[in-house]
Every structure is written in C-alpha cells, then in structure tokens.
Image (cartoon, rainbow, N blue to C red):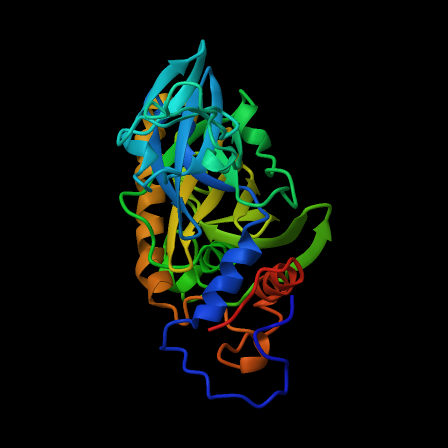
Length: 364
C-alpha cells in the first residue's frame, strides 16, 4: 500500500504531536484487518458470552455446542449488545440470544428465533449477523476481520514442548500505543542499555550488535550476538557459580510473524529463554498484549513467580517510553519525522518496510 502521500509530494505540514487523521486511522484498521489477532484467553471463556474490541469494532465471543463463534456485539434488531445475552437452545442447537428482545443467532450468524414474529411468518433474510473467522491456538482466541486471513497464526514451538517451563504474563491494563509500535519496541535492542540497564544491557557498553535480517516464509527474522549481564534471563541462577559471571554471551533470533506477533529466542550457555508477544490492536492507539516466557533451564515451578515478576518489571520499564511515542501510527519514512540510523536500527527499518509492503498503512 502506498504511504498516505507520495514521497516528495508537497502537502500540509505534518505535526507528530497531532492525532492521526481520520484517513490514517481508517487505513490502519483496513490494513490490519486481514491478519489473525489475539483477543482473549481461551481458558477464560466459559458458558457466557464476552465482549472484546478489535480495531475499533465491538465483538462478542461465545461457545456454541463447543465451537467458537465471533460476531459483532450488536443485535440486528435494535442494536443492543449481544454480550449481555445468554446461550440458549433453539431446535436442539445452541444459539446466542439477545437479552433485549430474545432474537437468537446460530454459530454461522443466522437468525434462528424471533419470539415476536407472528405464527407462520418466516424469519426475514436480513435478520442475521456477520460471523467472523475465529480460532484457538497457544491458549488464546484469535479473530480475523477479513473474509480470509493473509497468513496463518504464527507457530510457537516452545508452547507445546514439555522441555520448556512456560509462564504467562498478564498486564493489568492495555498499553496506550499502536500494535505496530509495540512490536517495534520489542524488536528494538539498542534501547536495552538505556531502559533496562543492569538487566539487558549497560550504558558503559551501548554499541549496537551486528544484525542479520532476512525474510523466510511468513516471517521477518533478525539474528545477532550480544553480551548481557548475568541474571534470570541470561543464566541459570540455580547453578552454583552462575551468578559470579558479570556478562553472558548469547545469540538472539527474533521471529516477527505478521505485523503483530514476535518471538524472541535467546540461546546461551544456560539454555534457551524465549519471550513471545502477541499484540491485539484494540484500536490505533490502544493495544492489549499477550505475553508468554519459556525456559528450558531453572525448571522449578516455584521459580515461576520470580520470572513473572522480572518480566513484568521489564515491561513496565518499557511502558512509559512506548506510550510517549508520537505520532500514534508509524510515520512514513518520507516524512523524516523519525530518523532511523544504520546499522543499529536495521531490524526496525526492515520491519517497517515489511508491514508497508503487507498493506499496513503508516501515517499521521
């Protein structure tokens, strides 16, 4: 997709502090629609419907006869929220019933019951609601708003590997940022010495690593070697002598799948530590994050809270910085609002090029 204005064109001055234009917001929503987005923890969806928001649209999630369904959270009748309703049985099958007038909808969105309809009159053809693509993977419910998803949901091999101890990190509140900026902030390694000093880097050694970046199937892959302080995320602290090392040499391999999922793999002497992030673009300026860490060392379950707390601490260090970034949406390169510098910013440059090619609009 072309940027909001052609490179070199003359248009109104761009102010990074202003909110994005209505055109930019619409382009962002449309550009993100053909991808799978994480919206809810699968284990938290019980027998009652729940409401979620994706790309500015209010949706309802529900299980009907054991199968997931995702609809607009708006009844076709008088636009009450369907998530305020309940699951009922109509003609032996489960249906989502609106709590306002009892209109009920099957798993394909078709209207199967209108209690007020006079006897003998057929249900109007236009009484149904849309049914969105929905899937369950990695313990998360995913929704795609397009008729067909551009890519499959990215793999997370460590999730199903019994050699790894998994820890899910739940954030208390959404991030006030775009999903693309959230992925950029996670992919960015040159901020480690400044935002995460003593954990992921040192200001005494701020030099960026030498990155390799390439595309493989549906992923952007970035790889580099770096030294980081010994700690939970770099060394097996349960082993005698591990904490006596001041620096640990490790290899990062970052897998960016689609515009909104990233898997950071850290290989080091202690083993492998993985940070997995799937972002939900609630809208252009609100992002809900689904985090999981996985490790194949220090496997004592009693240590899980220690890792969870450390991960939460790192995320909170990032929050204030990422939420401060303007404009909300990534500015097109031609605006020169941002000034990426090679070679240290190579991963971010390649990511932004990629999402523009995928049709995820940038703009302000």
